[in-house]
Image (tube, rainbow, N blue to C red; front, side):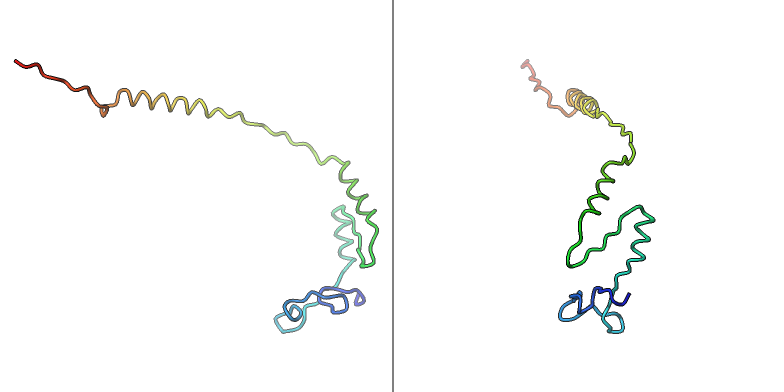
Length: 118
């Protein structure tokens, strides 16, 4: 397992921060190593595919096959009830009530009453 390069490994191009590598709380460089056994177990449990990509290049055929299997299987159906919007009726009633209120309002201007001279 020590032969696998990881993040922070200067031989593999490491992940650096600023002028140096990421450091832990003790000031030591943080190293992460590839653990293919764990990744293969996770992909087997979840029904996925584990393909290890190398710098020299890896065939994309296993990835294409996995995607093709996903595209052909049914993931299930879902019934969606679409609501019909009827807010126009409420707006119409509100506008009608506003017009009626304006017509019978005690605050509307009254026509001026002229008194006849005696």
